[in-house]
Length: 342
Picture 1 (cartoon, helix red, strand yellow):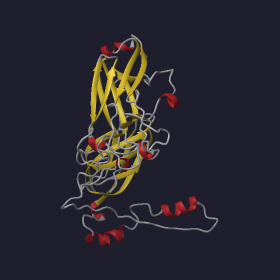
Picture 2: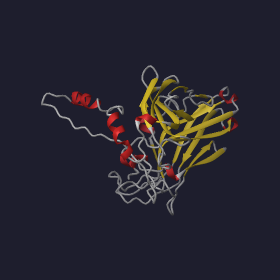
Picture 3: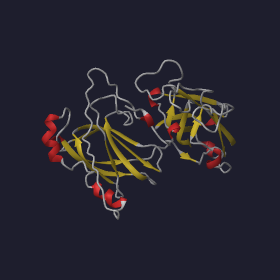
Picture 4: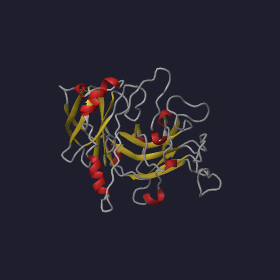
């Protein structure tokens, strides 16, 4: 079992019993004039979970934990999406559990579907039960989550309204607005230090001021009439000393990764990102893994008219034991940072 790219590993101990599938492999071929698009279209006819239902029903009593079609339903509905949402996806997963952590219960199930342009979705062959619904999309901050969604043959349709999470009005806070260049002055990975291991560009590690990032921005007096500031950090992946292990913290090293924000030297708070979110992503050329977020809420009096400074910090020279030829620095990968005033 692999824990790469954030995939949590099941705890396979005495009594473990879980069924995956069914899976179907289809190998096709064409002549010298056949295009890849034609081959793909040919294979796509077998991509539907409704294909060959009769066959799977006929063997269901031989397969432990497999539910026949008589105990499944087609779940469908519509979604009111926030403005700007693109490529929305809906996920059915274990109730009251992050769908990215699909290993703690051997009975948990997951179903994914793309939402079409008319904002409708259809998920066939869903085992009857109670699920969490998660919806996410490009171009929208955060995601939609609703628990206790019951699905059965008699309850198989539902509508959802997703209102984008907001704690006020964001005003384009990015390092220094109007001066910095994202392509040159920012990185999607925040390293504790620049490692030499697994890095053909460095012969020895580099430590000077790598673990601290400084973001500056300007505010005016009118903006500071707000009473509360909310700084939301969305992380697309993180690595602690736990590596890919999800079930227990490893001995020694930094398991829960401390991520600290300092606001103008007047406010400081630390978010301990839990060890079970750890994995290896950036070092494997991945831009995203397990998404997790945290909100820092503080009085707007900690901000000031004119230049403001946020310092984002990881522990200095923090590393993990890396048995593969991969960088051993601890790090986070950012999805988004947002400051709101209300």
